[in-house]
Length: 617
Image (tube, rainbow, N blue to C red):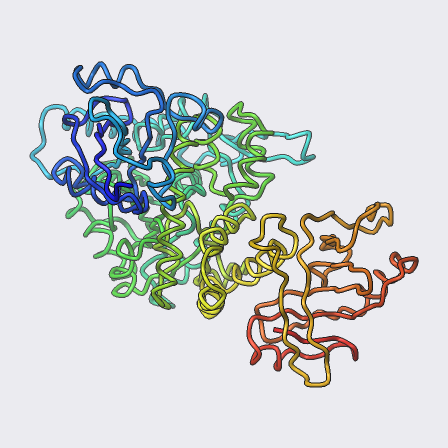
């Protein structure tokens, strides 16, 4: 069998327009699709210099297209893959973690096109250039919009410009600005691009914190605050919320609209200044939203905050290059905003006329980024792109840990996989953050990526993430799911059980059998049903908070607490007693609590909470 493949490819953009001509790539049959992406990137170095190889989305054409026709004809004939028809319709997504040999066993006919390479849209900062007539017009338009906003809301009570929104299903009310209200205020011209502005509880908490800190700015020698958090949680929305509240209170407020100029609202009106000029009055809030156009606060803001005249508020992604330097030199605070609750997502989706059911499914699968949830709910193409990119991201994430990258920065790991949230919810302690993998589905993607490795490599992975300050919270949850998947999986290799070694020499060794399926177990004896032994139960976490898995064999009841920590403070006595009540009619010997840990050292440190508990590793 041939060991190399020659495949003919065509790159297209998001509009299905061809990028260059058809090209061929030679690759080893046993290589991963991710390596094929590297080869494509090398082949089209000039056209693809603005994207990384792992951002490319590669489709296999199931309905072949001849290569002797124009590229435009081919691009018109192809269709986008979707979650529903992937591999069934005319195209199939190739995931980065699969091998090419899964899709071909030899080089296909070279008279046909075999692959489509979709190049995602990646926005790049515009190069500096002199103002042309169009730019001058935009500046004039921005100033006119700012003057109108000033006349409309300056020193107007804030509660007069917002509207109540009641969500009957939630039995809650929210304040927001509707599409009509935003249009009437002209905020889109100033850079606000959303259809509504939902006022989150997090916004009110942060506002109070900023107001108090700005009053003490000279006392604490603070030049301002950086408000950050997970991408897609509404930091830009928060900045415009601050703008509106500040104008309503009559506070002098500066808004950096572009890298080259800013607006200043004060008692005498609103003016536009060059980024190097102007002298904001004492007590000014200088607002900056970091994006492709604006990276850091302008020179006037940084100069005036050094003297205590202004208080700079920057909203930004967690990328440290956008705030690290000025924070250090101006003694600015760092504040991490928490992500959307489900109730807030529900309310926002209702305001935008989105399917709440679809939003709920996506929320549970992809996590709490409002931007991602709105995009995947609105656009099936975005969903396919999101799923494909995640495969590459997971592969890179596991590879980083595999390389002993203990200093991996959670804030630089792609937001599609890892969610950034404040370590503490106390507003006074929002300067620290942690990264977590927010959903069971995303955790399972990571577990799948390490599933084919040796036990030693798997152990190494769990140890690494458990020792990483940002991912320690995810480590325990992943290990718990890993153990449950092992014991309940019908597809586990050879049906191997889990061989456990007792820490204490007088305790018997134990092999926990694989059960080939599982059933949920609440506090209802009817949940047990009729099962052939061995069978696996997944206890309800609220009823049995200290038991992760229950295995029933002909002569043993094995209750498992899977923990990655060397200590476990939860007392299982209540759960065990409660469990015995419901299983008392079973002719099963209670084997006690099995603490399943990944190392003997940690097992020795784990306290034996009840006398007959076994500590295994």
